[in-house]
Image 1 (cartoon, rainbow, N blue to C red):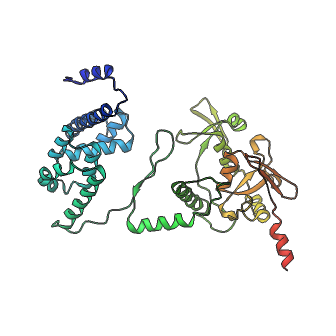
Image 2: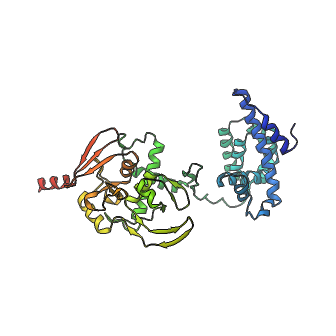
Image 3: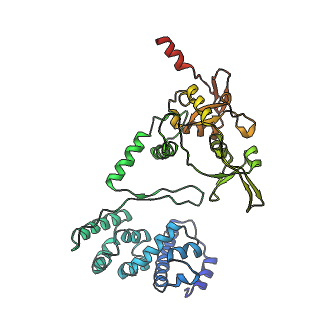
Length: 397
């Protein structure tokens, strides 16, 4: 039997787990018990303030620095260890394997610091009941307990829980949305997403799941606000978007760049972002010394954009009528590849179609009369004429 951390590490070095259901199930149960031991140690470590020895400001900050935890994981582990210090029966059931780690998380999520002593007074009776339940039923039972505890308290009615929103970076560089919204805030967000969710043509934007469509709609709402926060007039945009750092050589060759925080960005995203943006010239010496920082210059001037709006009127992808306020100015031949920033090399593209053209490699050709020829990755040929509306108008009047 392992009596210390060194012996446990030695056992793990030689432990073999065959791909057999019973053995994996047993290993997961022991993993939960080990997590309970770690949590107990973290609680004592937190109470003793050991995390402050290296200048950390909290246990969760210490976990980020020393245990290679994400901030979300660190906060969760610190909260559980702190709460279980007040709930000895729950901690014991976890250590003995009667409660799983997920069940303990459900308990902690519903037992606030204010109600911890109340729950502790009844946990000897409640814990054996929870041990017979699934994680989902445990969470439902704990939510019911919390509502009763709040309703029977002697103090004033607890305030409405404020909405929270988190957008942490995941290990693969994406962002994970999490949080919760009040009833009123949730209704506002749902209405905005519903309004921004147009019909998707699977041939153009293949988003098969409802979750993907909701995500696209949420991004569309945010992008529209960024583009139009200063002015919502057609054709006028304010673009406080994102900063991207890319070397001149990489820009010319389609190489990658990075966000200001260091997150890598692929070349296709660099090309898309730089189509309609503000560029700064920065002269560097090595990787850390800035020798010169030039003033910003728009790739598309306001006058040129105004002329583009007059000609195109909306997104130029056939069948798309998103207005100029939802559109970028797309270089048919990107300027990094020698394409000029002139009207005869620009078309309006809504964000979705702008992404589509860059990400999926659509081939675009713009004729002198403004007719746009599009070839899909599968060879489908489409055309778009900016004069269609004028022809209809001349026929009617």
